[in-house]
Length: 158
Image (cartoon, rainbow, N blue to C red; front, side, top):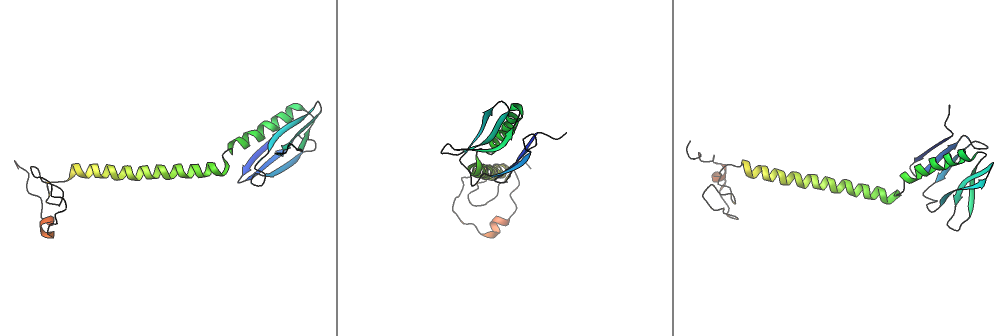
């Protein structure tokens, strides 16, 4: 059994198949060109129209239904698809900014954790700015390469 109404949005194009309409039809609607509209259901018993209303208030019927239930189901399906796209372009930009912010936090957090790990695992080496136990650090004091490349002195008690 085929569904009475099938709707999907691909990119900026809304495509809806109204199988219970009189006559059945497939409707394509460009959401980029028609970004300001209202979806509306109008009519009375046996004569229901689903359409769009322009910002000026003009109603443009899209599809005709005999049964109110079919018209309401079609309205609900289209509404569901449109509500998923409610943020449009700005939603995509906001999502991209969120991904960038999370990536920045992961990177800076990773650097911070690496720095914390490195500070706990360093041995007492004579690198400038890193003091051996019992010494004050010598920040900004250059050291010769031979002194930096020497193995660390043995720890006390070994």
